[in-house]
Image (cartoon, rainbow, N blue to C red; front, side, top):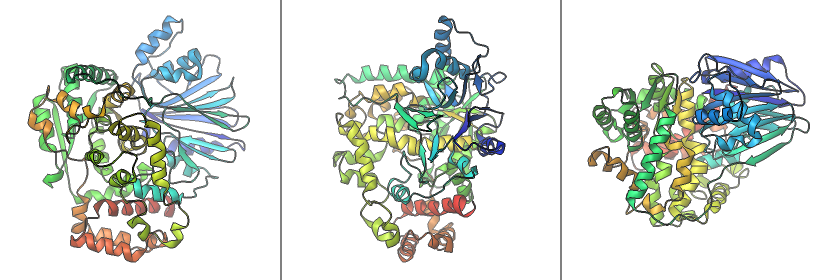
Length: 587
């Protein structure tokens, strides 16, 4: 687990650029640093040592000096791939998974990536082809951003790297601000900066060092085919059990001890159960609790820890955690309406006192239809505006249009967010509507939102997170399973709950789902009312000229008085202002 960055520039660069880029992502890899330069380009790595601590220094460079490679992430099947390469006569000097990547690239060429099971962002300089190659894992677990303007191309694990570059054009995308207020996050491939985009998951980008042109190649996609003929629950349970066991086992490959996040929810509970089954040993778990009982799952986490004799560690949070909102926004790079970034940051710091690596339950909701929003599919067609509105923060074309100033409205396409949704959904037209919704969340919600939180907040604390549910084989398998095996009679995660009954009590499995979030809406009414008012009545907020101030004031008053619940809307608008202060005002 590390950070990577680099540059391709016709103008060249000063020596200080490498140092500045590395400093911007030092928190991702405080154990080591290395770089490689060639022909007006460089790649670099900051390393958090997990596998082959002594000999895993990056970049890895080929014997002839023509190929250099850095990576951020972990290749879980590196042992099997190393055995395959050794059988072909290739020799290895280390036990590092990064060396396996280098030799696999030499052996199989640019599509070596298809052989990888892991979470990764990879950068390669190939002198023979005179190219820089960028790879991102299939689901977008590891981040990789790219900036391109004229003949300057920058790439990094984090957007904040680009702010260190003297010629960076930080023009804000107003369309991305609008999309953010509809989605609650900035949807991919765009970012809040006009010239910065995600390297798309399941793709590799080839940058020609002569022409400075970028070729984008898709190497993985969930096939748009109809679901398989239904099987019995028992057959599905055996397949899921076998794959979850294997996905957990290969993610326990490490030269450092492994802990786990344990929210008390079904997904993290199952991962802890499989970890206990595989290791046969107690391990450390880390839980966040709240005094507000409707948000607190700690009792369920304690049940799991007790059942498997795990070492239980808990922190109880209160309203003063809002003091971390600016810091977590800085690490996140973009505005985000999900305030649970804060407890994730805290639990990551909590775990990092003992560990460099933890397992999590991320991805289970997107695999097995775990969110309550999917219940709307009983009423609406997946590709309809009604369904889109039901899952949106603000309804596009609704109240949000009244909130915008006339000047801001002139700069956006007020149907752009829905069009983006339709563009993605249309790629899954052969699937049933439940799997269409899950397809959208796989290719958009995960890399744009749900995977950002564990990566950015954990890496802010120099901690690696791994989730067995995010094994790409799971997504390939579950997209062939009919949607009614995931959502049935208003029961979310239908088949996964059947599996969970093999491990936990019925009460634990079938209790009401709780979201991992913060009771900030209640705090806005009392403990944080002054914070809310001061933020959204400030001169800096008004100067953005995005919202009509009288309507913002009315929203705040209605929420504080309890006549309307604007929790989600207000926290998104507050975080947008926090982001501006962090990235624009203090630049």
